[in-house]
Amino acid sequence: MFGSGQILLNLSFFAILPVALILWYVYKRDKLPEPPRVVFITLLLGIGITFPLQILIIAIEGFLETLNFGEEASHFFMAFIRASFLEETMKFFVIIFYCLHLDVFDEPMDALVYGVAASLGFAVIENWEYVLGAESLQMAKDIALIRSFTAIPLHALAGVFMGFFLMDAIFQKH
Image (cartoon, rainbow, N blue to C red; front, side, top):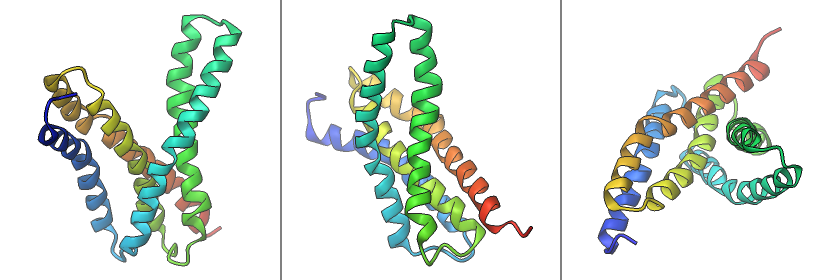
């Protein structure tokens, strides 16, 4: 692919680094920090949703091809169904089905930390695939740099929004 194992290791490091930095930043903002093990499991579950999501995307893309809607439908699917609905729903399932039932989920900031962890779990695999799937070494470096300022923070922001609305629904006093 890129010629050397060291280059592959370096690219993997730069694909994972922004995720680690953002997760560390959000984790350190919590005044009553969550157990690191639970946050790490949430991150791993975010990674784990990539595999069923890939199967689900293939199934839905196959269904769309049978409908023959044209090129506009393909763009609509990529923007609104795949990126927003499917990906964010799977991340939200991690928060709802795992994190919400934890005994340590006892303060509003927990929802934000878990939302970011689940979102960044998905983002780390997606970023790693984009960086290592580049055609050249220079393109891989460019993708790693650009995505560290665009896609990765946006995935984290989606996790913040999910966590915020979950926090509002659970800890609201009326």
